[in-house]
Image 1: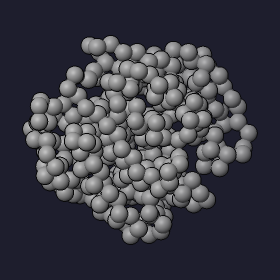
Image 2 (image 1 turned 90 degrees about the horizontal axis):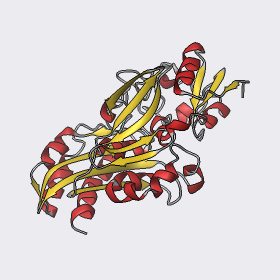
Image 3 (image 1 turned 60 degrees about the vertical axis):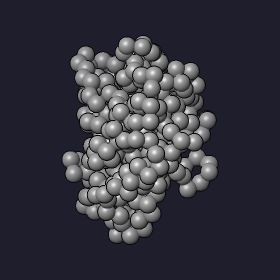
Image 4 (image 1 turned 90 degrees about the vertical axis):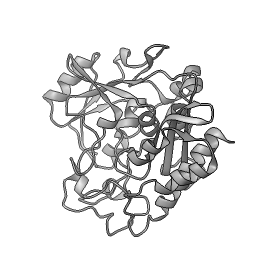
Length: 325
């Protein structure tokens, strides 16, 4: 590991200024991902900008009219234990309980989980892959069992965040700060496909910081759920995951949104699936029909064809467990 300087700003403005001034710098929140990247020589920052002293970035606030607001430095365990999150934003609660271990959830932050780097073993290993500035994605013709089946080319990573999938389904927005300036953008615009930039997972510039997650209020007839399939029963990243948020009127889904994880370089929305949710009557035949069209644009690699069938089955499982079981 190369030497670095550890900076400890006490405000968002100071942190942003440090990151703008020092080109080889990186923000540090819970550190569960950054420390691994540094130790494995994936990144070699000259400055690590500790955000934990910024007290006004850790909170959970709820208002019936405005919805849920979570500071980016809020610990994952605190969000999972919050009664409002459990009762009104079930998909987010379930996504957190499915990730990492209790020890890591006690350290990791919601902002860090959303912004974590991919777990591809070529990216994390001693390979000059395209995501590290090289010319080749070694997964395309290599070991691609865990890689994407849609949205890849030229880089076939999958986005590793569980919470991002749930937040996308929940129509969340993210607040981003740069010095004293801030902007709010939908979760769907935060993540970056390889066709846009194969070296980045999100839109954050060098001196921008994710500061808040905003989830709109849920109505009384809203149902939400998150399901994750892992290779191991213990802590593991998703082979595939799914989250759904549905507004119902009796036996009809008035409006719904489904997001997929573990299948694309970003948390993935299938527009055709979501369009067909509107006005759908709640029964198993309709659920099966919807599942059959899921990820119709997918192109599996040699070793991950299973992800397509798995994702289709997850659509049906999500709907059955939300409405029938």
